[in-house]
Amino acid sequence: MECPHLSENVKILSSVQTATKDIVCAVCSSNQSPWMCLYCGSVHCGRYVNAHSLEHSKQSNHLICIECSSLAVFCYGCDEFVVNDTANECLARLRQTIKEAVPETTSSQENRRNLRPRSRKRCHSADGSTGSTENEKTYPRKRHTASSTYLKNVKREKKVVGLRNLGNTCFMNAVLQSLSNIEEFCLYFKQLPSLESVKGVGRSKVYQSRSIRELNDALMAEELRKIIINLTDNGATKSAISPESLFLVIWKVVPRFRGYQQQDAHEFLRYMLDRLHTELLHLLPESPYLLGHKGRSSIVTSVFGGTLQSEVRCLNCSIESKKHDPFLDLSLDIPEKCYQKKNRDTNDDPMPPCNILDCLTSFIQVEELAETELYYCNNCKSKQRSTKRFWIRRLPNVLCLHLKRF
Image 1 (cartoon, rainbow, N blue to C red):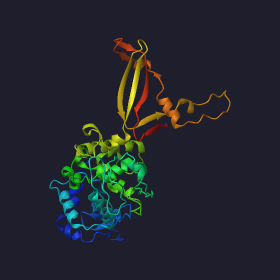
Image 2: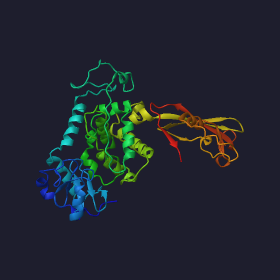
Image 3: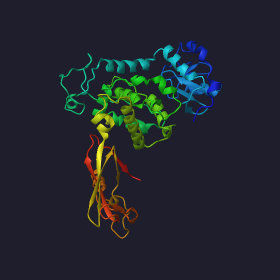
Image 4: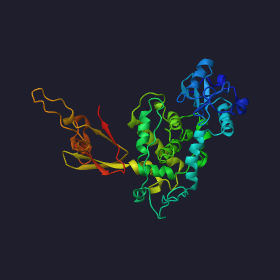
């Protein structure tokens, strides 16, 4: 939904240069998450610091503000991030002016120091090898891939870095922490250059688009790249990392995750991986950072992609039909023996334990299709009773399993 409050609340276009001289909260002087009121130009901290921007809006009824680092615009009247612009593109011009005028905050400088020199000094090649910066360990210069023995030889002390909860966002943080512990996945993003300037798709275009469905609307891959680098930077970041910029992008590209309600972590992972795969294929169609035949595979399918084989056997003629389908995860039922209620006449023996192997065994068992699911047999030329079973024809490097517990 487009914000109806823009025209009445964006007033500082002509005086934005003056307003950007001191980007710290007017109340607590914090430079973390600074939000500028687009009506009066005052700067206050975000709701995850001391929430002075929210207090300012309540007291003055100024509804629109802009985050000076990420350039995201929020409307307190709609309680939503703003995805549209005025007819004369005031927000686009404001973003450009603020981007040029605002000095980097301490957190921005730390991120730039951690991220950009690393991507500039590395030498990227089609085989996935990288050069080392002068501050890093050096290793023998030989050709290798992210999944080769190189990973086994790189032994670094793992230091834990936390993620700030932005308000019921533990589902997202759990997924990000899991992804940050997959070595091949992380190594890929450490080697990947910044995507902000790829094919002219920059941060300015992210926020100028009127549609939240277009691919160029936001770059989830770029924000995820920054998060992964920060999480795996061997403790260079001492304080917890705020995934706010990534969350803003997710709100734009996947509207169902807007707001601060609890969400399903598995559902979030699937949306994120699908979007990530699409972005990488679109932005890097002929890049060495795409894997596989003719660039049809990305790091997503390289790490999580497997092949499932389904077999349907006609019970009349015994002819089998086989089909192969790609998958990124498997949804497993809990075996019936592990949850069905015991007969009252039986003794009080406990339920048998259930483990992943039980669920996988149940997944590949032969089952007879119901009468409502009769299979059309090309040999018999009619619908027939049949059996069906699944096989995992090709295992992924990382097998993601979803347990259907309810």
